[in-house]
Amino acid sequence: MLVRDIISTKQIRKIISVETTDNVASAAAMLSEMRIGAVIVRDSGNELDGILSERDIVRELGRRGANFLNDKVGALMTSNVKTCSPAQTCQEVMQMMTDGRFRHMPVMDDGKLVGVISIGDVVAARIKEVQFENDAMAEMLAGNI
Image (cartoon, helix red, strand yellow):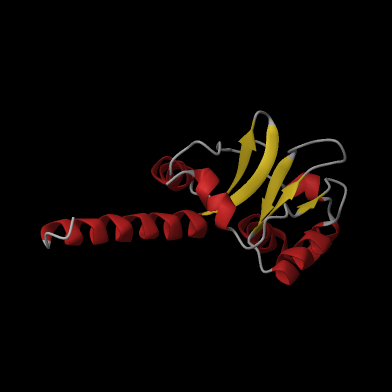
C-alpha cells in the first residue's frame, strides 16, 4: 500500500497548522481540541517550517515546568522535518518513523504539502494489507482461485 492510499482514506484531510509566532499554549489547546498528536508549523506562504508534537511539549514541560507555554512555537518545534512522498510504501515510511523515533510525518508532493500521516495510519494500512494477502492466500489454498 502506498502513502497516497493512506491519505485518501483519512477522516481528517485538512492540514492543521499553526504559525511560528503562535504561543505553545494555543498549539497545545489545538492538539487537545482536534484530538491529534502533532501540528504542522507554517507561516503564511510557506509550505512547511516545522512540526510540533505532543512529545515536544511534554519534553519541555518536564524540563521547565509550565513556564514555557507562552514561548513561541518556533522556539520549540522540530525544524529539520523528515517527510515522505505519496509514492512511498507503508513499509518504507514505517521504517523511517521507527528509525527516527517519531510518530507523524508530513507528505510532500513536488514541494507541496499534501497531508500528514501518523504511525497509527501506517500500521492500520499495513494490517489491512496483510489481512488482504492472508485472505487471498486462504482462497488460493482452498482452491477458490
